[in-house]
Figure 1 (cartoon, one colour):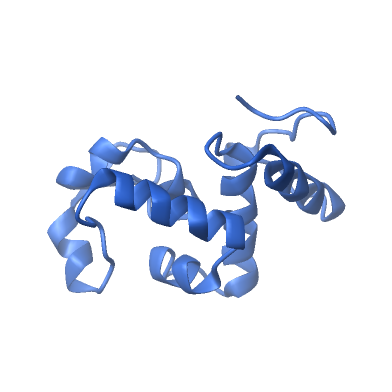
Figure 2 (spheres, one colour):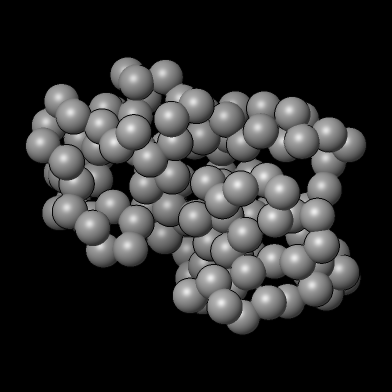
Length: 124
């Protein structure tokens, strides 16, 4: 799991013991992140997914601050939340389109610098 907006999308199983950063090759023990106050493991994986989905649907900035403590400001976190919401297939399509439009209006790209899909089309 990456420590940025991408953390919202990575496979849940990766959270069991390590956290991947940057290009996915550098591994940091999850215990190091717990020491700085990042909650990594709720009681169940379903709880984690439900919490993530709710936060993305609501664009919950408290959740974003907890997940992305090193982001320079809340606008950067909001960009990450919209990018994650646009990509996440667990989120209602209406909200994903809303995030795609929000990103387009600001001339922003999807994760990893990819171009956004044409209006009306979503990543699957």
